[in-house]
Amino acid sequence: MLRRRPCSLALSALSALAVTLAGFTTPSAAADQTARSKITAVTVFPRGALIKRTASASLQPGATTLIIKDLPESVVRGSIRVEGRAQNDVAIGSVDSRVQVITADDQKRLAARRAELDAELIRVRDRRAATQAAIDTAQTQRSLMVNLTQLPQQPAPRGTATTDWKALFDLIGTGMAQAQETIGTKLVELRKLDDQIKQLEAQLATMVPKQTRATVVSVNVLSDSGGEATFTVRYQVRNASWQPFYDARLTTGGATQAPSLALVRRARIEQRTGEDWDGVALSLSTTRPAQGTQAPKLRALSVDFYRPPSRPTPRAMSRGLSADQVQPAPRVAASMPRRKSRRVLARAVQVQRSPFQVVYAIPGLNTVPATGAPKRVSIGTQQLTPTLFAMATPRQRTKAYLHAKLALPTGAPFLAGPVSLFRDGTFVGRARLPNLTGGQEHRLGFGSDDAIIVKYRQTENKRGEEGLISTSKTDLKGFEIVVTNKHRRAMDLVVLDQVPVSRNDKILVELITQTPPSKRDVDGQRGVLAWELRLAPQAQKTVRFGYRVTWPSKQQVRYAR
Image (cartoon, rainbow, N blue to C red; front, side, top):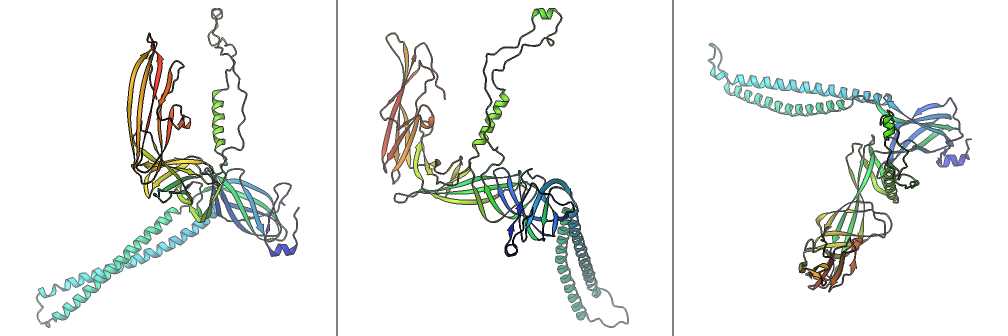
């Protein structure tokens, strides 16, 4: 049923269209009306995009089938939605879509444009012909003046008057100058006309009529009194994406100035949807609409003893049965098929990436071509107060590296992406930011810190035997790490090293240290030790530690990473 509004409401303000997709029957005598639409807004997902088109129509009283032909072929089925606003009460009965070849409207516009270009090309070619004729005339005039300069060398016929050579030379000079000026001017004009002809010919070459496949949307509309209406069509496409990337600009500060870090968010947008996004309101969303809607279900996992397939018995072979004719005994699966198991794991990974749902609205109107050329936009900059510290792994390299620990602000998440690192305005390298949510901590490295001196040496390396009858062997190793802070301010330093990890109960590893480590098994890595030191300006500290490995004397050990 079509509901009427009071006249005062209908005339004073635009009213939202009531969308009724079920229980509505459009009269069979509905008139068809084609409406052209324009992309006004785009929301880009990490994979795919949501397109918003707007179309205007002048509705007649009664039933109308509004036909919109501007959608690309690659529309995701089931994603089309139609809404709108109108001056009077209007109801949408149904929305249908189909893919078809679009030629008529495009070819009419194309033919009209080609006729304009052809007419312009004829006019330019006519001007070029006239310009070339003027050049030919001036060149002929110049040749005539050259011939006149040969007259003084020819004997004058008898009985003729004396020639006024001065007047003749003045005439030749004036004529030559005029001819040369005309030729120079017309040659410049000729080059410009040639350029115009090339441009027109190039435009005509690109305007060859083509058949295109497009998605056509039919909207069945019923209006009591007609009037102006604006329709909004939303749909999703797949061939679009955006990826985040970052700039981390660290200012290290000084003895009296705290460090700061500017984290600049940027995005790279690409699309090959078949339609240009020209001057649209652009938004970036972290939603992944193609990553599934619910967690996968687990199937029962069973285990049984493995039973090899039975082979033909000698008796069966003696009866004349071939190996192919003898059926093996039924086999009980020991586990789920491996292929199905891999599918479950892959879907689980996809579900883990779906929690982030934030939309970034890019200011202004933006244009993204459908050629796949990347469009880079800035999302925003956040000022953070980092905690600076140095980290050294002297067993690998006797160098300290400056790190900044960031406490990320609450709110929008940080999607995984590459980050360019700058320290005091100098580019020092690249890293990668993982998926992070607000409130998490993360550290970034900003290159070597040459103001912290690291020295590393082995102080002991002995292999011996223990017991009265040499029942066991031992390795005894000792190390010394000396660090010096040459900064004018105090620095925190984390020194990492390791001891072997036994993989056999008969191999014993004992830590021997004069400087107990602050942490063991750092970041879940067994055997990794960390010493957290606070170094005053120009201060020096020493870390001494070692380990003893004991194993049965009849065995040999091997150290492996």
